[in-house]
Length: 225
Image 1 (cartoon, rainbow, N blue to C red):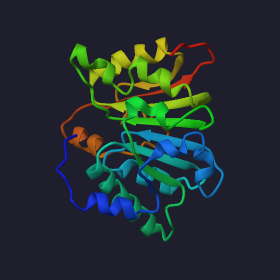
Image 2 (cartoon, rainbow, N blue to C red):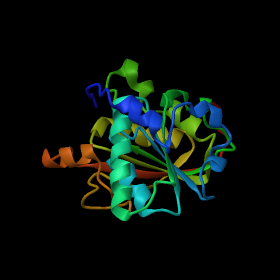
Image 3 (cartoon, rainbow, N blue to C red):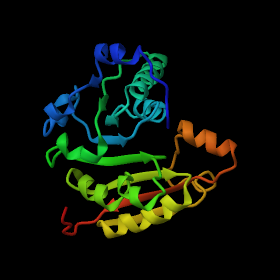
């Protein structure tokens, strides 16, 4: 998603208590960063943050890391998170926003940063063959996530793109993941047991597009990176 530069985003992020600008400094220490000990879930490519804001504010027994690499997106995420928590009258202590290139995720995550679940929502489909390795669900990326994903940990994935979805099914299987649930029409078959819509999802629904979704579980096999 393209978004206009927002001059307010950087100053607001720098003043935000739940934003971290240099996540590399927390590599191996993420569980010690949150105020309360709890399982960690992560959203890769959080966009404007409406999804993670609703999810985290409804599940205070889970700690969340939301990653994007665009200041404007993170600024909007920050505001959406604050709005959701203000409506509940609580502080956002179970969520951290951070900025980084997800293709280089092992620069700030390692095996000590155990994550129980990863969310990937409507990532760039990169349809051209020469760009497909940039996909957040490509085998190259999935093998990186395995480094810090809990044994039997899960990845929840949503997209409107048929080609990306079908090819991602193969990526997961060849990267040591078991597909435990999938659907080609998420709004008729909610495999997530309480689907939270993203901005993209609402837009695609209005356009009449079917939303695809899957849950993949990490299998205990030896995968070389």
